[in-house]
Image (cartoon, rainbow over all chains, first blue to last red; front, side, top):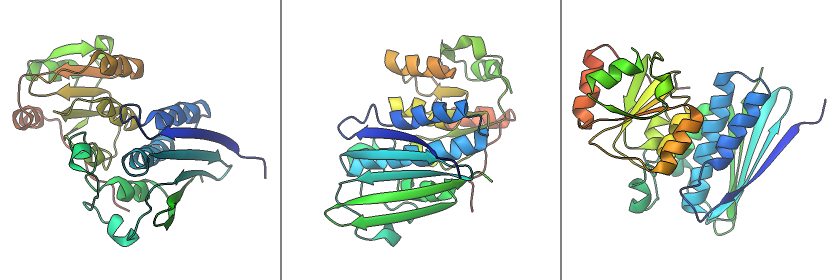
Length: 141
Length: 118
């Protein structure tokens, strides 16, 4: 199998205004690869929600996107507080985001459910007090 | 429905990307919660919102939307308009409130769309 194309992004945790820049960039990169608009939208929305989550909850992090022949893998890693109850976090409408974030249009408890909705596979590894790694996969075939 | 028709129906002004005003749109959604917007999937949609920050433009771009309508005369910043212009998104502004703006468009045939479920 040929080597995957790798894209790496640092997500700035201090700036809500710039949150989403990595997702905008990956969207452009994937367009250049000639992938279908449906695939590009699913990858970029999942990554955008993840990016927003990292800014809201974890003070930023890193995002790595690898494009393989058969799938695209998105890995989001942060050193935030971790998720104490994943089942609860996966419920639509459940959120621990502060009110200030809600007034910015996020924190509706849709982030993780949306990430799951738009990807074919999602794995959450989290340790309370240490951080969270989310690995998502979107199949190309 | 053409974006130019939306402009007329809502008595709206065009804030940027006027060159795309003859594009056709087939569905719309109204929300101030961007994550709710992101739960919808369909091409060519219009976003009506009373929320004003850069994430509105990014959300619209992520969803491949082509038009944003700011209701209640909310005015986006120059920076937001620059982002929208870059993405070719038409930005409109109307005095109408969310309920009325959505109602007018719906009554004239611009439908909503469905949440994608696995």
